[in-house]
Image (cartoon, rainbow, N blue to C red; front, side, top):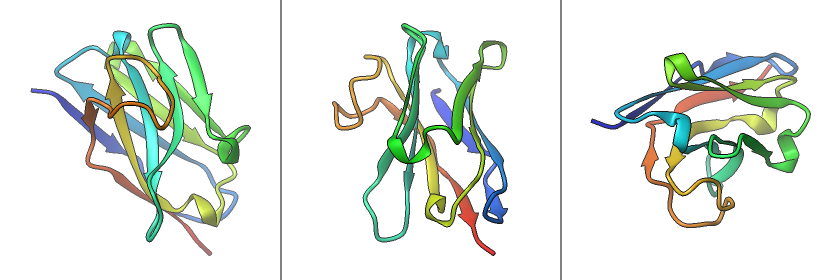
Length: 124
């Protein structure tokens, strides 16, 4: 059974850090693109970061470049999103997703699998 389970969200203050985890079961992430998306209240879902395990490339949306880092632990079949210097505009539900085609852009074909999401709230 394929499952993507996100964890690590929470309530933090501006400037703090969080590390989100996406633990995958049912397939190995080695041949998939694993992406992080987020959706804030009243806004469209947006792509945040992606690790394309096919070629090792990483992708970030402009608003998080220099602050967020995506990485993986193949032994744990887990992909992480380290978020530093968090801002109030980072508040959203964060989802991870997997795509067997590799990264084809944030507006490409639908991703194959999705997790249930984890809430990140940045507030004083």
